[in-house]
Amino acid sequence: MNLNRVILIGRLTGDPQLRTTPAGQPVTTISLATNRVWTNKNGEKQQDVQYHNVVVWGRQAEIVNQFLKKGSLAMVEGRLQTRTWQDNQGQNRRTTEVVCERIQFGPRAAGGVGSAGVGTEAPSSFVPDTEVKEILPEINIEGDEIKPEDIPF
Image 1 (cartoon, rainbow, N blue to C red):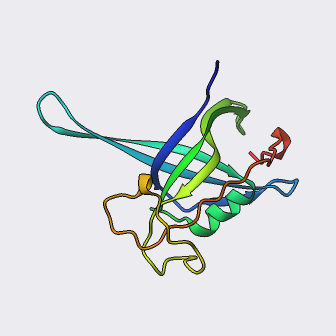
Image 2 (image 1 turned 180 degrees about the horizontal axis):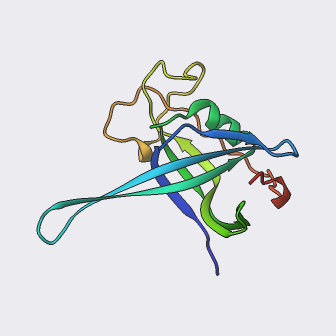
């Protein structure tokens, strides 16, 4: 049995970048930072930050672009994908990214961008220790088939 599944909870390192493929398919790229904190053998607190490139397709891409911004908390579920291409100098390049299949937005302060008309129910497994003012609804979009020729990069 094989499994390619990623679940990340982190903050956006920049604003989402929305593009459209030549076929008209929306695609958004985001960078997500995840932190790991531990104590070493000497009792000193250590911290490590990892940055993850995430690609979001279809209607979810439009929604991510509309509601998230730099610093927003998000949970991304998806799969790892490695792409190869040639750059302008003829060098072969390779990158591994998370192809988002489902995204859930974290809490944010009331009155933020796009705050009108969104739900306020907070998922109990994803609420940090801060006070929750408002949670965006979960949007699960299935059946959007992505073809390699639709990828703009």
